[in-house]
Image (tube, rainbow, N blue to C red; front, side, top):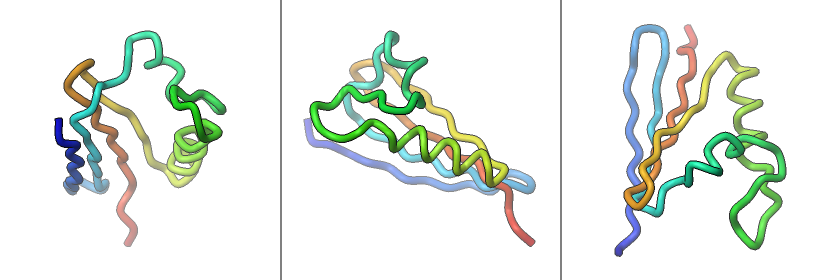
Length: 85
């Protein structure tokens, strides 16, 4: 199927929530708990460090990152960050 990426944002109180989704294969049940682990990857190339580094940086800035996934339908990652000033 044709790949699709969606990006949305919404202000909720004193935070902004950004949603980045795809219509890919989703994340398997076995991989869900490892997805933010350093050096974990399901790909044959790359270091698997990206999501771990992103999570640490987002949390250090006072935010959160999580995902919702359905196998065979896709995954959406959510990033919630505090609004400034």
